[in-house]
Length: 301
Image (cartoon, rainbow, N blue to C red):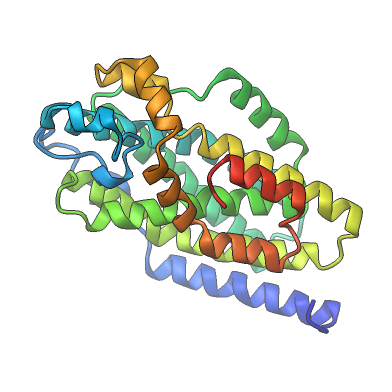
């Protein structure tokens, strides 16, 4: 990796983990305390920035009343939270498997457990948020659930960590907008702030893991990993908001799905959120021709 020795790479990796542990000790949150769970839901506020709605910019959005738009963004926010829980459970199992029986005195081992603890708190936080938003359980479609079950069992090395990075990077840009938007419910803004701060450390570690592990990967495995990562990204992104959210918001589901699928505004928002991610994957040799095709299908490139 850039001419460094294996020993030097290990030292850099250990230093990154040690810095992340110190950062976690200095700045972490307890959502049970930090989030206002008791104030009744204000139905005059959005659940997410309306510009991030899957229907914003469509003819259907223009026809909705303000009350319908507010309910839609709340249901979409809950759907994103549910998808986040799904992937965080996949993430936790992959990280635990990766560090199984490794040296517990290694800062990377200790950071891995810290990250898992963060993700447990985040999942509970997202679950409580969805309940407060008055949303039903938004489950990803069956195919995504079963592929996720296989992925968490089989993914290794840079494929696992790059997929983690993809999921976190897409949410990061989205949630940075939501947490600054005064049109969004206060408790949702707090949740997004917590997630952005703590996930920034997770993304730093994931990037370091991808670079370290891909440095010794051969060309065939690199191409396969690039395909697997892109496929995981496709199912994560396309699972964020599904038909259940439109049904819960009282919309015409068939029309909502149809217009969301061809919404160029939302596609552009997704692409802009992934510019840095695509540059990183390219620098790591994980943006092959096949991977690019899948990212374009997912509107990430």
